[in-house]
Length: 149
Image 1 (tube, rainbow, N blue to C red):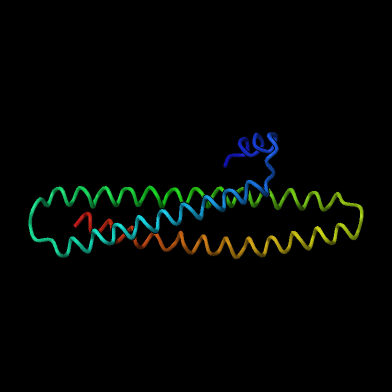
Image 2 (image 1 turned 120 degrees about the vertical axis):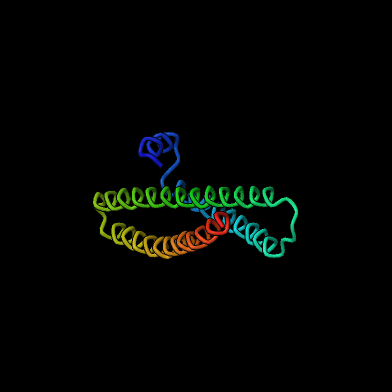
């Protein structure tokens, strides 16, 4: 999400933590849709192995369309993850700046502890999102091979 958009949303009252939560939810939905698309394509590929004649061109066109839709869904997941990364980075920078401005030592410590805990949770989430993203590429490569075959 470009900085201009983030600034605009913040001026409308949306804070980065809310934007991050929203983007994480959208990323999860995108990943679920991509997973379902891959399952649908896998079913069609299984049908291909049992293919007994008929309109081969029609079957090819459907498989190619499935590949292209799968590629689009994978790209949507990648973009959503990029948005999450940008918002998280901005949120953490802003939070660190705010901590440096807190004069009360007790509040400063509590905020620092909350930031550290949030960064740890985000790191686990980020790792899971990246694993899901990386698992799509081998599937897409195999699917492309079948389409080209």
